[in-house]
Image (tube, rainbow, N blue to C red; front, side, top):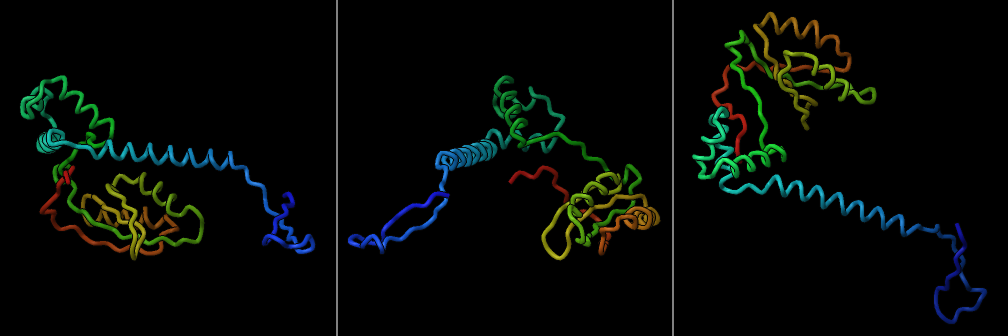
Length: 202
């Protein structure tokens, strides 16, 4: 630090001069930080804007793919009124920006899945990185088909898919019982799913 002299008002005598120590600031460094913050904000904003800019044709393409993802590019191009080349460019942009992605939806009953449940999990937060460790553990369980971090009365909402009640009991007692960080579990049995809309377009 360097002593800097300043006066409270004009006309004061030397004996009234106030001395203070202020810390020198590297304004070049601060300016560099400011430029970086602005650059990051502009980059993120541009990415969000790019993802959000969907015209009527884009939305039509997405709607057709949600209805039937096996449609060929030629079929899509014909239905939206484009030639194959412009259609391919639009698809490439939708994929590269993360607007759409490919996945496979299976019928649980066809795979012998006869029991599904939602499980509310509250963790005992007595150590650091408890949540991350829990996520890593449930990620290794094939029976946990969904894991959501939530804000509310509990920490995680899991969706479980198993063969039957006995298989669910096995999962609770042999798998979740081994996770010391779990404070409470609360199960809600899934009876039916009247509406499942994968890839809903707002």
